[in-house]
Length: 256
Picture 1 (cartoon, rainbow, N blue to C red):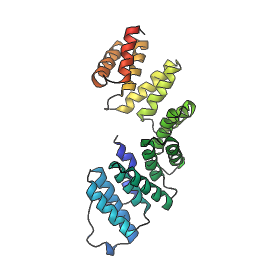
Picture 2 (picture 1 turned 180 degrees about the vertical axis):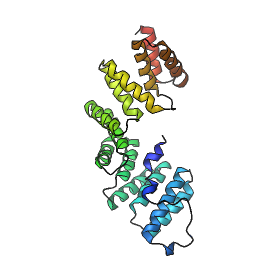
Picture 3 (picture 1 turned 60 degrees about the vertical axis):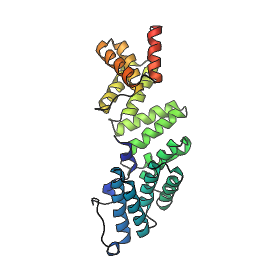
Picture 4 (picture 1 turned 90 degrees about the vertical axis):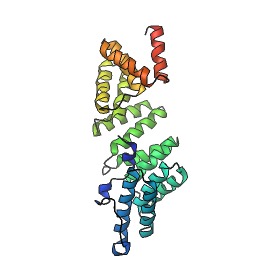
């Protein structure tokens, strides 16, 4: 799924309108007009028309300078343009206007994660994940798990990935991470179970190098020669320059 879909606020929460222009904004309530403009801007971002998105957001902020939604989506637009300083300013402004705004916290967390400011990102994702009204809690939890791994907190990562899967059983990353945890603990039954969940969650997407390398090791243990041949071929074809492929070659040389 496109990562951008998780960043932009739900259009249905703003307006049911499709992309359109207003002949005279003075005829509409400023707050309602601003929200409609934000919804239009979000659609423009999703269809890769940043100039029109910027125009709509600027007009939204003219109508309602205190619109947290406008500042949030402006942050998304600026982040896509790699203007991280102004993007952060807009996310922080959105949260100053509306502290209980989980989508803005999630978006801000994504920015902080990209900037490798992991502890700050963890705080934003944790707040978003704790908000029961947030429809994308599992995404915030997935990021919490990723950051916990980066910070060396394996127990928290494992518990968080399990929570994320309970909310959405079709998340590939938590399933793969839990499969890897189980494999490292020599719990092959759980490793197989989570790995199969990972494969189902991918649907038509390709496996990652990590997924294929884990699949190769499980196929060897399971004596599944058909799967083994497919995973070996795919790892070489798609990820010949990866660390996982080098690990695979080393395993051949060592006979492990």
